[in-house]
Length: 307
Image 1 (cartoon, rainbow, N blue to C red):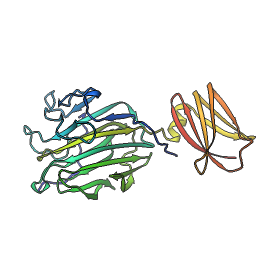
Image 2: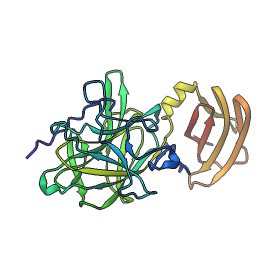
Image 3: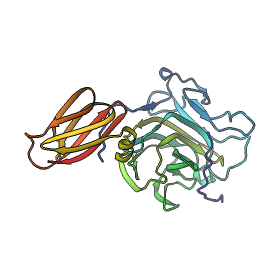
Image 4: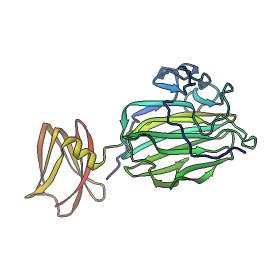
């Protein structure tokens, strides 16, 4: 029986508003620029390095099965290498710019092709970010060799459910600045602190090379927003209410501001003409608490005001 470990080699290898279209979408179809065969080098994807300056060769785009279109990505055991202490073999997508975690959502479809009675692979799906000390996991979902689905809380695995060979599952992880919530087939199954408070530099779909394969399809990445503190620091953003007016200042252009009451009803939608210093008349608003969503050329943010 193999050792279950948290080891995960880090090689290259407020309000949330619904977004209509994902920031990134991968269904591995030809109209996205993908071709059947080795995923390495296709549309920004890379596979695991082999330690000799090249890459493993069997992490492939396949037309064997799919949930969206005809193609999917297959993470498979590499016969030229021994079993690994942790999941490191598979495919990686590196974002050009970090994906803001606050309000982000990452989902994908997965089908494990192993027979777990034969002590096959662990499959791990994760987002990774960077601190001054290096690369760290933001969250992970683990489809373990014994048929359990797991995530990490307080440094150890927590069992979230079970998987069955040959069945497609949809996994979604929604994050705030400090938490991660896990869904299986649109049902919430777990929530915990985010593993490391970092924005996402890459996503990865990997196995530990004990035997077997898994198909991945229909990956959707919705980018979040900066946290209030990050937004205010990056944009030198200041807001305050005085004499029935909301004042907002920034070091970038403020494009527009939407104001909502606490039931979610939009009260105002103000557009500005490339200005860094704007104000909104609140004199017609009833006294109470409101949510303001402001959009700048450098991102969006939401905050509460009291009139």
